[in-house]
Image (cartoon, rainbow, N blue to C red):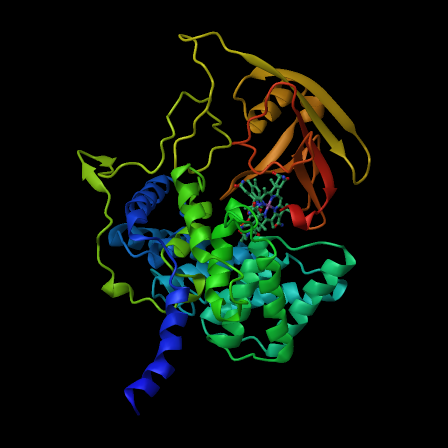
Amino acid sequence: MSTLTLLILVLPMLTANLSQQCGTPVQGRSLITSFLRAMLRSMEETLPEPSALIALQLASQHDRAREEQILGQLKENVIKNGTEFSPGAAAWHMMALLSSCNDPLNLVVGDQRVNLVALLTEKLEMDIAHMGSGRPLTDFHQISLAILALCKASVCLPCETIEQIFSSAVQLSIREEIAYPVDTLSIAALGLRCMSFENCVCRTSMIESALQSVIARILANVHCDGTIGDLNTTGLAVQALTANYDLLPPGSWDCRRSVGNLLQGISNGSFNNPRAASLVIPSLENRTLLDIDKLNCSRDTDDLPLIFRKGLTVDNSTPPTPTPTLPSPAHTSHTRPRIFPTAKLFTNSTSKPTTFIRVNYTVMDTVFNTFNHWLLLNVPLGSSVLDIMEEAERLLPTQFRFDHIQTPWGPLITGINGLTSDFFMTQWHFITGQNDPIKDLEEYVPSDGDKILAIFTYRLIENE
Ligand code: B12
């Protein structure tokens, strides 16, 4: 073969590869190093997140001792609580094991043994069996996570089952006029990619068109600044689009712009919990969840350890966020691991007098129409929605008492005024007076005269 022919054949392959090279530019490396360290530190006192271990394994720098420790904690959790896991939680744990070069078929801790593949398959089967009623038992986010995890363990579900799942998802979205959120589409795109081009070979026309349609929906959410959906959904979406790069219409997406946006988000102190961070890190490392079974763990270099001095953990690098640490009221019952210190604007007693603002807090039931209560509250400037809810509960517990469960994203409100959501058909949904969804009850800080509404509604998938 002549050199020219060789070049003609090889050049498109080289440029195709180059165009897929995204990840973080060299100048951004120190930011990621600090971010990885901050994430490790934030997990010191809580049960670690499986997705966080995956992110650490996919990263190019490692603290092998900590990763090993986290793996041990996750394995124990599977042994103790695995049967109670949701399909999504079982899937994240399975992917964490795969990313750590462990076999999910045979998870052993001491004299106890679990087959996580069998456990997840059983949970997924229950979910699928329920689809006959029009809806799965959980939701398409969790089902997509389960498909991806099983596929990465090379457990290939029958192609007809995958077709059935995606046609049910389409029918549900048409029937209930819902649009799936970008996070769910991204996991679906990774799952379908794996099922058709990676560990399994379901390349039927229906599965190919399902993948194309999921990609088109993600692309429809790309904004000019590179955000895909919103900042919280961009990390996963970058993974989904990078993994399917060959299927994107030319020029339809600028990966570098999206990655730049994620780096900016880190500098601004976004992605403030290990789960949020873990969805972003692989994109910055030019990796995706599809790489979890391609790692060679024993070859990882130990180049990320936190530095220990006299029992204290200190970081030898500049923290990635300029956020100042100000005194904050402790939410002892609602705290979650945080990567960055939270900036709260509360003034303490020795400084200036506290400025108060007036906020209207409304709770209403739009499902059974049983109540619509509101309260005007004077709260210190800088109070979060959660602070306001606590104050309302203190003043008028008969109407504003609320319950929550702790989740990787923080406290999820399960009930207000005795009305509990089942999470599948109904939910407590939070919006501002301008009808904007509130993304984070601990972070969102209303201004004077603002209105906060907690609405009991049928589940709004597009607002998740
Ligand atoms: C499904 C889903 C929901 C479902 C959860 C119920 C269920 N049965 O699964 C419902 C519809 C109830 C829901 C509600 C809300 N959600 Co939602 N949800 C998701 C989604 C798409 C998948 C979660 C999941 O199943 N993960 C897999 C399982 C295995 O992991 P998990 O950690 O066990 O999942 C639990 C938590 O994610 C938790 N959860 C879900 N949403 C939220 C939101 C908040 C603020 C908290 C603390 C917890 C939480 O519920 C899950 C099941 O227990 C995620 C996207 C993502 N990337 O995770 C968004 C996501 C977590 N939700 C989000 C938001 C904003 C909300 C709402 C605040 C919207 C609103 N304005 O009202 C409300 C919560 C209000 C409240 N009651 O406190 C944001 C959180 C952003 C942040 N805080 O930084 C996310 C990341 C979407 C996004 N990209 O913006 N959600």
